Image 1: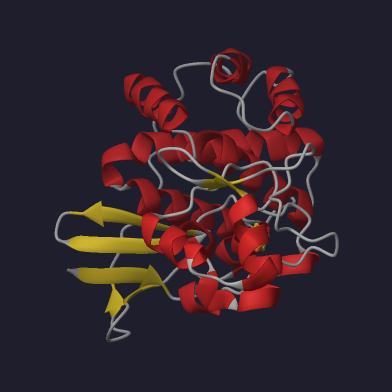
Image 2 (image 1 turned 180 degrees about the vertical axis):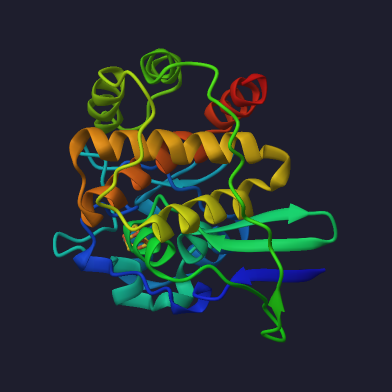
Length: 263
Ligand code: SF4
C-alpha cells in the first residue's frame, strides 16, 4: 500500500522536557504485547521498577501518579525508560505518538496529530504539500474548503459540544467563549494561509467523506480564536485542545461526523 505524508512529516521531533502539555500526562498509555514481553526480560533493579510501573490486566498500561503523570515521566520532563534503556525500548504508542494513519482506498495517509503542541506548530507553519513517502513524489490533494452554511449558531454548537465526553477541562473555557458568539467569525489578524493548512490537516486525517466536519472544525477554531483575540501560540493551544477532545475519542468524533453531516 502506498503511503502519503505531508512534506514536513519527517521534520517532527518531540520537544520532550520543553513540552508544556506532555502527552505523558493525563492519558492512559497501553503497552503492546511485544513490548511487554521485552520489559519482562529486562534484568536488574530497573527491570523490577519497570514491571512495578505497569498495571497488569488484559491490556497492560503504565501506571499514572496521583496527578495523572506517567510513572516513568521524570520531574525534569524526560522519560526514564528512554534515559535508562534507550528509545528502542519505547512501546508502540509512545514511539508512534503523535502520528496518525488513515486508510483511504488503496493509500495510507500518515500525518502528525494536532493534540501535540510541536505537531501543531509544524502543521500550522509549513506550506501544504503532500508527497509519496517512498519516492518523495508530490501528490495532488484538493483542499478547497466547502462554503456551506452552519446549521447551528456558535451558541447552539457549544451546547452540543458540552454533551460530549470531556477529556480536558480547558475545553470548557473555550466553549464558554464560543457560547458568547452570535455568529461564526474569521479573525482578521491571522494569516489566511493558516486556515488553509488547518483545513488540509483535517481533510487529510478524516478524508473528503467528512469534509463537512473538517470545515466545521475550522470554523469553530476560527470563531474561538476571534473571541479570545488569539495570537499564534494560543491558536496552537485551541487546536491542541480541540483535537484532544474530538479527534482522540471515538465517541466524540463519531457524534461530530453525524451532527455535521446533517448540517
Ligand atoms: S505532546 Fe508532542 S512534543 Fe509534547 S511530549 Fe508528547 S510527543 Fe513530545
